[in-house]
Image 1 (cartoon, rainbow, N blue to C red):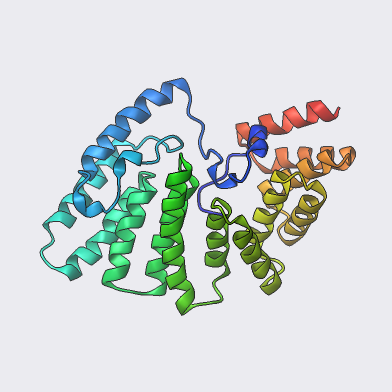
Image 2: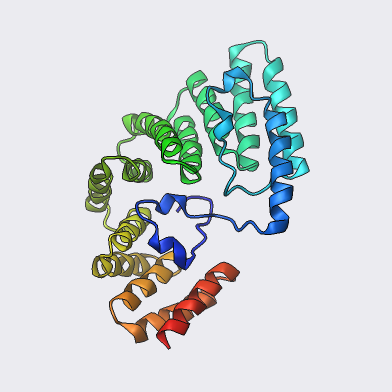
Length: 285
């Protein structure tokens, strides 16, 4: 799983070819005003300078948490230091600091850009992976297909640099696969996921994503197989257990589904998850 938790809601299951677009936070009415204010401050801290290399007008804000005053200050400080750097070596080092500040403020496209700057200054597998992970995180928040294509392409380019050094990095390969799912050639992504499973039948992220894709195509039997395997590998996988229960409920295995839904309630104190579980249990009872 990515470092951001996927917020599981029942309505999300109906989305087609968009598991990466699931909301990762809940924004209530009070939050909207503070989020807009913080995003404006974050934009000012960024400065939207030409060297960012992309259009910040499309900054993913719909699912981002509001930046705190401390995060905005960290962005302002890191950006000022970066802009004052007089040599490429120093700028490369400070680019990492700036990328981390952007990531902490949930501005992952900007984080990806500056991690990429740092990786180009000092190429290395881990440097390109940090850039790829940030771009991938931004991709999961993309509000439009066009933006998803752009950020997915950036993530792929970084992960391909990782795989050129380390072909056995299955996490990178799995993320590349998921970026293809949102394109006009989703089968390329599914093929890559299957290759990951052939290499490592217990790869959790690949099992999870294949299960979700099966749900989205209403292949609940296949989804149940994927999630059953996942929870056998990792019995504490909350999302895997939830979606296994969903899959079983959709195939008429109600008693086992109810048992797993109740188990999920004891695995997490996420109120949104609990609400989704309760809704399913109400339907099954």
